[in-house]
Image (cartoon, rainbow, N blue to C red; front, side, top):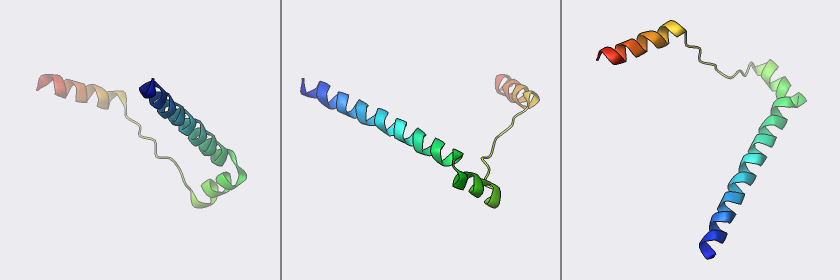
Length: 65
């Protein structure tokens, strides 16, 4: 009974954390200040692009060894 209550409390707090984190991040990204910071300071998320050829070469190298 006690363990179930503790586990339910921890799960509830984790869900609350995820909801608040996503709401704040989304709010900052869509706000005027967030847009201003992105344009003025050129803050960009780095996206890693990997070509199909690189993936195939890596897989072939892994299977050969």
